[in-house]
Amino acid sequence: MKNIITIPNFISFIRLGGGFLFVPLKSLYHFSDSTVFIILIGAWITDLLDGWSARKLNQISDSGKYIDPIADKVFIVAVITTLYFEARVSLFYLILVVARDVLILVGGAYIKSVTGMVLPSNLFGKLCVVAIGFYFFSVILSIPPAEMALKWISIFFIFGSLLIYFQRAKELVRDIRYVQQN
Image (cartoon, rainbow, N blue to C red; front, top):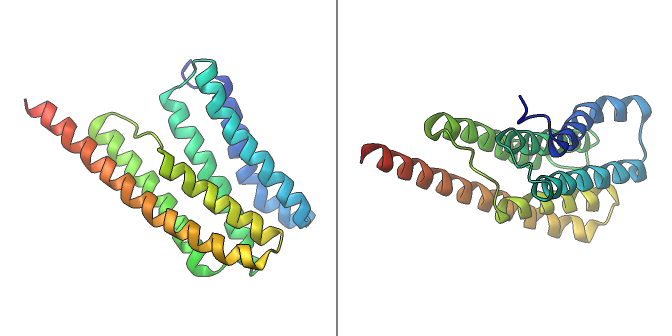
């Protein structure tokens, strides 16, 4: 249990809770776009802070490798669902983002069950989340030229990150099976 009680995991749990509370609180209090923007900045800061503190405090853990991306995914799905119901993003984009996150979660569980290892995030996946976040910012701040460009950039990163993730997963499973057979 000591592996889960760390400062970085605590920060991730704050973001996870914020993701679960975002939709009901936004519905109840009718947050303005500027409030949503500040909340997104706060979520982004906690995402940076948990990774930085894990490395700085030497508290990188397998539980953190689960909690951090799950917190990211919950928050992203909460925001995009809200934006969809406000008719600010398309159903296609909602499905694309949610499908990516579900595939990565399911794929990660499969990799863990087959190899006993957690496939860590990579730069392309992080850039994907940044691109999605900037798209959200452009939608919330109502910057139409940026919205279109960032939407397509994020779609490129969504597909690219999925391809890279599954290629890395395939190689890891292959390598583990090779080691087990020899």
